[in-house]
Length: 131
Image (cartoon, rainbow, N blue to C red; front, side):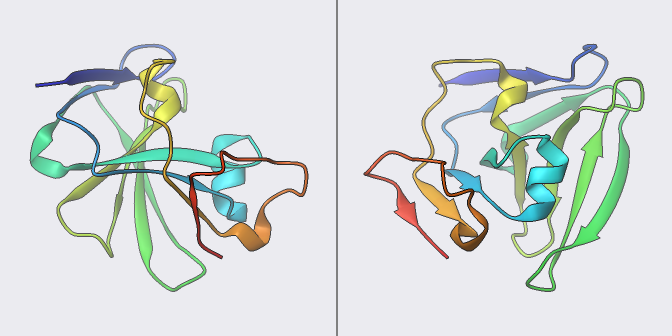
């Protein structure tokens, strides 16, 4: 079984995810742009029982455009968001793909909030686009 390790920039908050992600997606919403510091965010969903978390985390919740909320867990020392839990998807933990620091990580298959995608961003032709 595949085991992947992720951590914050300073290493204080880390997680291990067992198995393949349920879904890897790109989100172009403005909040993901702010959270990631990039023009989109890439995240992987895992079953909650396949994720083991180590270290101390701060948390904040926000309500998205569709009215559902998500709780983001970040390192209180370096500020890196290491995982988040979407209320609308029980039993799932989402992990920003960048915290795995693994160039071999599976590519995204879904792109959401396309209406907010920067015009110059180009994604692979085999990705599902959801506005």
